[in-house]
Image (cartoon, rainbow, N blue to C red; front, side, top):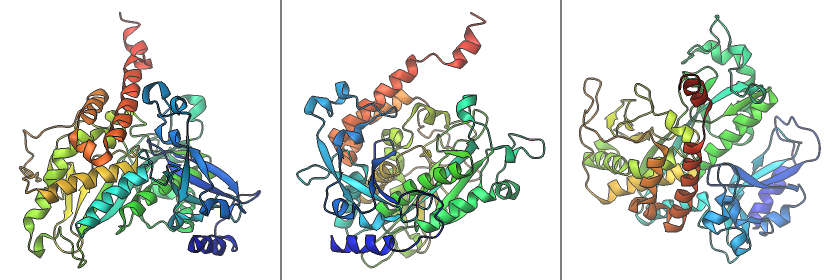
Length: 460
């Protein structure tokens, strides 16, 4: 408690680099809901004592909200049915950082939700990931995790237009919607935005590395460096999403992690790199270190659990538009050394950098649940001696590999029936997540879209 206060005071007394906002300084206590959205409270900057003494509360049902913000009490019984009880927001002092877009001296801190009796809430995504990390610790192992997040920058007129469009700055060469993969012109044209994003990342101590232009107009990827702390890696990702949006607002844009915002352009992914180190600090995935089968068994564990966990990696109806033939979003449950068309890619198999890259999740997914599910698949590969099947190479792609589904409802049913998901998330959260997503899937199926009207109304 004392150390947390000390951190807060030392940060609060100085003027942070890059402050742009006016008004009174504040501190925001942020929790993460099922869909990876930040929810919380703003408090006066002098409310330090209340934060660190557990005086900030929110209804526990805040973490059961669906994508529309409905608590679905008739479905879950977790809100008014039981009196909508409070939980305690337990702030993590490691995550206390500046808010460079707000008034000078403003801070934010991530918090986990606890029951009033001191138990972690079964609905808290940070607690779910922490429990998985503890299982690795019990085996004397530490997951090392990094994420690569893709997102689009769109014009701020999307509300009036009803659809997104690239920033006008990118309508160069007479191609308003042209491809821009690694195109430095696209980077240069939005350099003021990207510079703000980099400054915000520095102010929040995010280990941001390379920034690249991706395929779609206004699409970018930011790589975050590896952390020997899976929870911190997921925190990095959620904070990156926030600063991407805050920087966009400053420049009159909007950032979006929607998996497929454009029909004719690439979707946005969340690629996760993972290695595992033992108590001696050695990377157990190092094929040159004496256990070449370990890496393949882990790949097999990941592939065997992908269908059950697809709803975690693709949590919304729009997510399934990303899985298209001929795209870099994988459909087949395949693996390979350095092959970007696989679900599980091995960028490096020898030395301390040996790792797997999990390429299935969309940018719209909750990073805490994504990392927890990936670690669960790795755990299966560590506990058993598994065969991942044929390797995908530049000259050979397996023809009979199992596939992911293109259907939201199918993914929901697989998760609801999965013993693997019960083991990773617990039966209560599995039921909550599955039931909530079932409601979303059914509502999507029942909604008559503009496509229906344009295609069928004039012809039938």
